[in-house]
Length: 526
Ligand SMILES: [Zn+2]
Image (tube, rainbow, N blue to C red; front, side, top):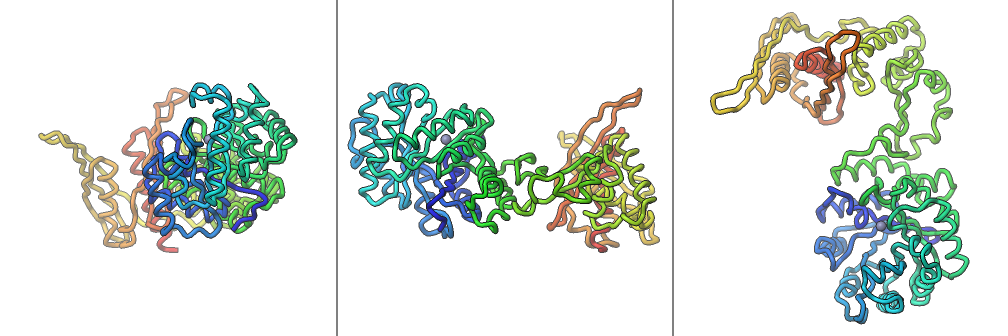
């Protein structure tokens, strides 16, 4: 179990799931909890039992289905209702019965919210804090309190906000997490208020931030600098509106920039994988620019950097990506100089350092193709084919040659659309004609090509078209617009991307398909 000196408290399963479009099943929530435990967070807030049937079920199933190595589960709920004893409040009972060792109570610290949302007076609100905490502590639970709208309340009525915190401590709460519920604060405001709370109450202080001002992570760090020893956040910054503080960014910053050991190094090295695994469960496309764990977080483009990058990657990276389980990537683009091509080649397993002529030829070809609308940044496999053909001769990537291809699209009498393609190719000394049907022309061409090659290359049966993207590129200097097609293909283990650029969308697709199949054959051979 993690040390109690500093808490990493995850709220993905409760606050994070307020994000628009997220509605995980109980099984999903259990899966996410396992991933978070893999990051060795100290606490996982599972949800609000009693208020939400799915969350009640989560806590029930967690008792038998979750085997957490690091984290403790926390059940979230509200203070008792006004005018009822905590012991008699059914929602408080649901927290007691959840089986969670930690109960986190949300309580109001803002006078206008007490008046307008709770419709009670300030004195009764304090009684609700006191009674609920006292009752749950007496029942043997460890109680954390989330002081909702704390910072806005503090600016409006400092004395009352501090009185709320003192009440929680007197009643036996282990800590009070101060919440920037509206997410509009800036780091200096948070730092000042946290320092004041610590100086004028005896509370252990936690911090819970939202990202409405774009400062959730900075605000969390400011609170910790001011003495907070408990930080809340959500995986991948999930949460309503602009999201909660991104727990991954907070953890990495604390560990790598502030020298605080908040999770084991081995767990930190799993962070990128865990971030993506959680995205798989939530079905939210990972944000490529996410700090530390994003696909682009260590992607370098400009040619001018590449020569120095080759000499010493640390010159252009704030950390070694491996410590968070990420990788450096070099992007090939028209801005690329020779160093970039050389570096990218090395990454793909080709040593170009001794062959300056080849590097010059490849650089020229990349520049020429990119001026016509190619973009190798997103098409590693097409780039590797180009590299291979330049270095080892065109025959190295020529598994077949295309004589002709044709595709027709037909609307049938009953309104269906069917496509049929015919391809004529030469491979291994044979001339092969094959047809393929599909729900669209691209699908039909893909089927026909694989049909034609299938006898000679049985490995092709494993290939699958995973993704297909089209973009119309503006024409310039009097040329017509062009169509760029990116295709992603998989073989069950890996995926690769290929590109085609033509004036005609079907022709662009065909080029990308031919590259995709050729690359599949090249891989199978090596
Ligand atoms: Zn919140």
